[in-house]
Length: 602
Image (tube, rainbow, N blue to C red):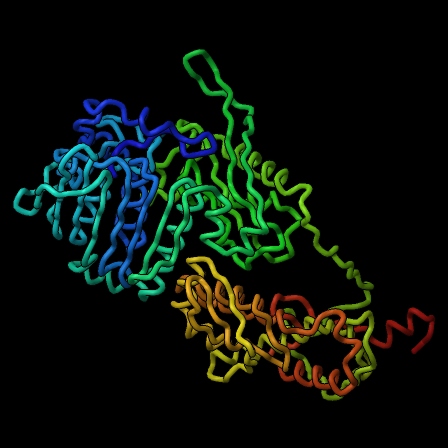
C-alpha cells in the first residue's frame, strides 16, 4: 500500500502494472525517510482528526499501490474498528517495518519536491499518525513469498526520522496473497477529548460513506466495497463511470445520465526536453441530466488526477456547464475528474490533501465548463420556460422590510383570482394583490417551524408507503438524522440496501408533500455543522414549505371559502408579508393611484 503511484489517474489512465512494477531489484527498499528540509516543506497539521480521515489515508495508500480492488469495513462510528484491504503491490519485511515511522515513504525522494508529485500520498505520516492514536495491524505481501505482519499499539511510532521502538512494534511472518490489509482498532482510546468531539455513529459513518463514494466516482476502474457493522452499503464493479454512478446512487439516476471524456488545450506551454510543450487538460466524468437534481451542492463531486478535492472554482465551472438547464435553486448530480500534468498541481496546500493548488486555474475552469456544456448539448433536457411577472410600478410591497405585519386581513374581502395565481382582495381603500403560492408558502413555513418548538406538524400516511432510493452517503445520513426527519413529518424505515420506506410525509394546510421533498429535507439536516444549524434548518423549512403549497393552476378551483381560509391563515403568521425566501407576498394599490390614473379627484 505504500508503493509509488503509477502514472496519471486522469483521462489518460496509468501505465500497465507490469511496466510500473519494474524489476524486483528496483522495488527493494522503496520506503525511505524524508530529510528534514523536505519535512519542513510539507503542509503541517494533524493527520488523524476523525475516522473518515483514517479511511481516506488508507484508501490513498491502496490506490497508490495500483490496487484494482479496495475493501473497506467499518464497525460503529469507526473508532471501534476500521479494516481496509487491497490487492495492490505489497511490501517486503524491511519496507513494512519502516512504513510505520514518521516521514518514511516510498512516494517521495528523501529530498524531493511535493509539488508535481504523482501519488495521492507523499508525507509518510499516515501509518505512523494512525498508530499513535490507535492499535494498528498491517499485513502485507508483494506476492512472491511469505508476507509480513506489523503491529503497533498506541504511541509506539518513532519521532520524525527515528525508528519506532522495537519493544513497541511487533514484526512477524504472515500468510497473505499479494496486497495489504490494515486494521485500526480503538481509535482515540488514549485521546478522550478527541473521541468526545465526534458525532454519533451514524453521522461519522455518513462522512466515511460520502468519502468512499467520492473515491469510487473519481476512480471508476477500481472496484470499491464498503461494509458497516457487517452489512454491505456500497459495491462498485470497477468497470466504468456509469456503473459507478449506479452503485453510488440508483438505477434512475444512472439511466438519466451521460458520460464525458474530452481533452482541451489550455493555450499555455510547459518546458520539456524538446522545448515548450502545450498543456492540455483532460475532463472525464458522468453527468446526470438536469431532470435529476438536489437542493444542495453536496452531489457536485470534483477530483484532480483521481484525488477527490474541494475546489470551489472547479465545482462552480461544472455547474456553469449546466447553465440555465437547471431549475432555479437546484444543483446537479455530477462527478468529474480533471487530469493535468503533475507539474501543474500542488497537493501540498492543505494538510488533509483535500484541497490542491492549480496553475492556470482559470483556464482549467473554463475548459471544464466548456466540456460539460458540450456534453449536455443536444440531449433531451427540456425545461419549462421562465414566466414573466413584471408588475406596474404602482404596485408596492406591503409590510415592513423584514416581512413583519402591520395589520391583519380580518376586514379584507377576497374578490377573485387573476391569472390563476394572484388573489385580488379589497381591504379598505386598497386593492391587495396576493401571490397565492408565496402566501401559502409562508403559512406552511411557520407551521413547520413550530414543529421544532413542540407543536406537531400535520402529516399524511402514505398507503402503500413510498420507497426512496438513496446514495450510500444519503442512506447513512437518513439513519443518523431519523429523529430530525420525523420531527418534520417524514417517518421512514430501512428497506434494504440504500432504499428507505417512507411512511408519512408533511401535510400542512391539508396539502401532501411529495416524496421528492424528503431528499431536500435529508440534505438540509445532514449538510450543516453546529455553527450553521439554524440557517440550515431555516433553509430546509423554506424548501420544504414549497412542495405542498398551492401553485399556479390550483387557484381557479378554490371556492370563496378557501380563499377566505388562506387569508385567515396568512393573517395569523408572524411575518405574513414575505415568503420564506424573502419575496413579498402582498402588493397594494391604493384608491388614490386609481383616481390619478383615471383623472379623477377621488
